Length: 453
Image (cartoon, rainbow, N blue to C red; front, side):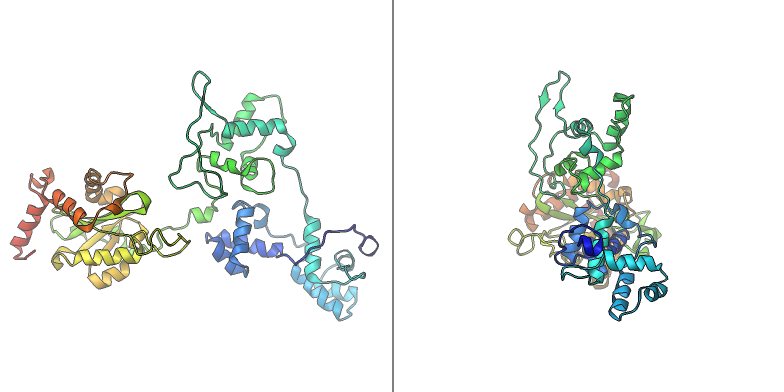
């Protein structure tokens, strides 16, 4: 190979790998905020490859998000060189058609040609692989070459928690790190937990005259998130405050999480009569969540404070079928299940008592369009992070926590039992109703309208 190409022996590429250009296109798709699976599909690779790319780089594209300079040959140009060379076109003619220097084409045909057959054979895929391999400029991370700096950073990240007397406090035992995000509501190891930014700035105070004890917070993040850096243990990501195993692309973090909420169902489009509470029939709703993804739906009428609870039992197969990404919602409050349960609840009261329903931004009501068509009840969604827009419902949920405390499994209760709790609230005097009960206030309205319950 040295004689044929002027380069030393290179490791065998095996099966041709996917080009860096494809990975760059993949990261461009990720930058739009879509998932790894959809980005992989968009660039024509398998979802497993896309997931591997994302995890290997810790969700951080770095240089992969930058386009290659035009001074370097692209894969398309190498394909053109291969086709023209197979047609016995001369080097200068190939250079003229590509608008490149003849010396560039000549070097390309020699240095990046395949040599396995014992002679030079130019193939675009092999040439691209060789060019990308030689273009790598590996550089040792600062935390690898400076053990003293690495110890300082590591102690500030995962150092033992000590009391005022210097005694170590063990804290809880954390579940083993499996390369994924922190366990839901799981115990986390107690550590010093300094942020990379705190470590970076504290170094300047602790070592004012030692320039070797300097590192940027971004370098610390890269050492934690990117595989192959070899500086810090991968499981140290659990020492960060977020505890997430991968970085979240900015566009994905800022992506609209409420795609089911359109402009015409915003609370700003709600009728003005809802605000003054003069006319009954306008409701507020939400879920109270318990352990093991259990939930109970709550509905409160704004004028009379009459409360109805929606029973949300487990779907068939819950606990037996393994949880799968984008799989069926078996916990009991999926979009279709929730819409059906609400429609069944609506049928228990007169039509004129169901004018509108204001819900929070939860995706459990993402099937609201079908619910509105089948029930006739208009759905409106509150603004993000604005619980006061559903104040009646929030206050009622607080009362319900007397019966359904946080941290309990709500799936234990039957429909009859939760209706008994609703009856207890509806027969409790309320100050805002001049000490009448919600049931009495609702009955007075129904009698005045000549309706039957």
